[in-house]
Length: 259
Ligand SMILES: [Fe+2]
Ligand SMILES: [Fe+2]
Image (cartoon, rainbow, N blue to C red; front, side, top):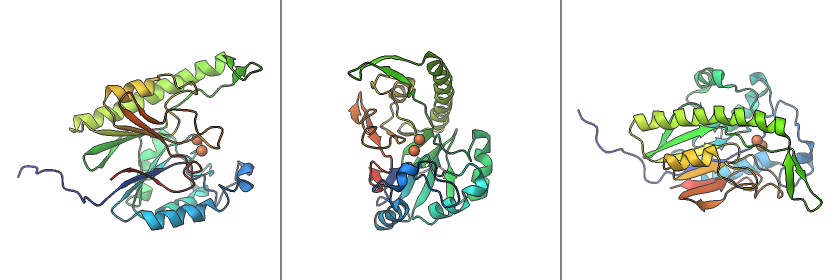
């Protein structure tokens, strides 16, 4: 029997949001969140928004920084909260997800399937798109500023270290693109936790690779607070739609990425 055209429910939608930073069983390591109105009771507001917007056939991509828990045992209640949200849940890695180093991905998927899918070095399918994800990396300084807050230099040693992290992440991203391509996909949506560029919005290995593979969208998170929301690209740049989906930026309302 041959394969027919892909069949899917046309009513379904793809949503994304990042940085839930849950801490039902762990210590909150950003105490500022306790006083910031946007973070106050954010779990309740996010859950309510999901229940109003997201339906069982929909896909919800959670773009890293899920939990403050360092060990899996400290994340159980956070994962239970995520499991109880509507829709198919895909989790990607953030810099604070200490429970998840890459070799643990298979184990995480065995433990939590079919409720949660931990996406790393692989791809997932949404309609005729391949969903690709990796943590990414961006050099965040320290930068040295002059009196008018212009960048006049940066920490060379930290920059050298960050170059290695970028290379590793680019390898992972390429591997995921190639896997999806080998299976016949030509439409890609990429999820990075870190922004795709530095604060000068220079081209990066990530923007170049996503352009090279013809990605339609690059979705990222990680940027918190008014002063960081405009750290990187937003809107259409060289043919790709860039979108920030950190939870506080979205005020805990998941962003619709695709119908
Ligand atoms: Fe975060
Ligand atoms: Fe982050």
